[in-house]
Image (cartoon, rainbow, N blue to C red):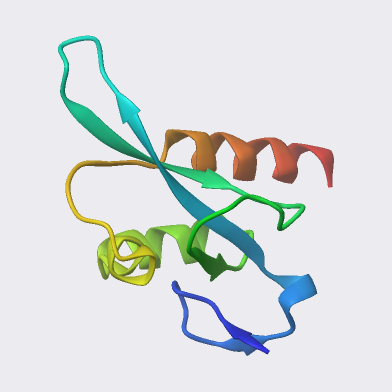
Length: 92
């Protein structure tokens, strides 16, 4: 059982999407923390769990739960995660 960082409901891991943080350097030398989906649950690093719905992502963002769950701070880039959820929604 895992807890969605958006709605805080407990679910089986197979029903949730694992997300991880990666450091990415921008063109001006600063760093951005990129939040990426890990649907195969294989990427290294600390993970957090989220229902694969935009509503749960919005709640997690509003509660600032993503940074807390992944134990990262700074500027978070969730664009890759948003794209993944949009594409997943189009294919279902």
